[in-house]
Amino acid sequence: MKIDLPPESRIFVAGHAGLVGSAVVRRLERAGFSNIQTATRHQLDLRDQSEVNHWFKANRPEYVFLVAGTVGGILANSTRSAEFIYDNLMIHGTVVDASHRYQVRKLLYLGSSCIYPRQATQPITEDQLLTGPLEPTNEWYAIAKIAGIKLCQAYRRQYGCDFVSAMPTNLYGPGDNFDLTSGHVLPALMRKFHDARESGATAVEIWGTGSPMREFLHVDDLADACLFLMERYSHDSHINVGTGVDLSIRELAEKVRDLVYPNAELAFDSSKPDGTPRKVLDVTRLKDLGWQPSIGLDDGLASTYEWFVDQHRQAGHLRGVELATSS
Image 1 (tube, rainbow, N blue to C red):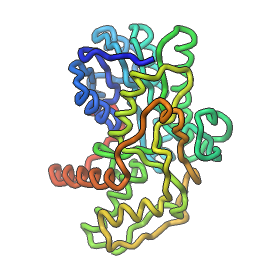
Image 2: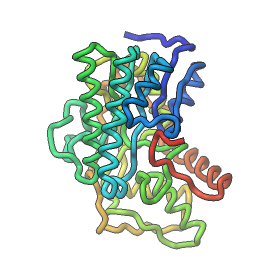
Image 3: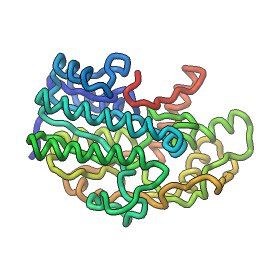
Image 4: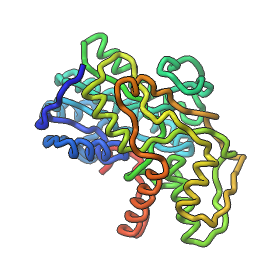
């Protein structure tokens, strides 16, 4: 059943300064919403239930996009496992509970495709959740995200809350984290090739064998899907969000090289982990609802690199965002 959100609706975007949150804010602004509520990490610690309760009581949001979290690539996950599970568990718990206590009309929780088993059948359908072991390199983050799904389900079942969950595939776009120690594969590749071009290096090192298959969705497409689901989706089960199309890390690296530094050679370090062998989502349910992405990978890469270069030029250095609630 479709709901029409009035343009004056109080809409809280939890994690508005991160990759996804900033895209959701852009999408809401483009749709004409005039009462978008945000709070920086310095204004509101989303891990603190008392702070979150106080904020909800004072601001009374009607709709919540819960897209905040501590995020990062394989290196960050493996070296900061306690932060990844604690921060995300607490953020999900406090916001969901406050949304119930202060009668939020609807909440959309955003998870991650890493919730699925390492050896999941491809493409991955929603019903494969909890059917096998997780990928060890990001299990702490995945467990927290799974808990978020179950939290929304529990509040829906016990209290009748209209809380729904969406699971996006790998994301990229303006606002991404290009830091080499905490960024995901696509922005990290873009940064590596950019740095190599600047320094005149002839080769760029890439973790792993290049064989893993991955799917990538532009963050502005995800933001569009989030608003679509807020208005049109109300179900106990989570729903996948992606393109349904994947490519190898080698193919991705070649695309980034051709865009950023065509003269560079690819140097794969097979001593580094590959992660999950293949991960592509089955997005049949979302397509059946009437939504599909509109930004192709080549166009998305070009606009993302343009944003990256512009930020680099303005700031004189590169700034990553590790905690999606940071300012």
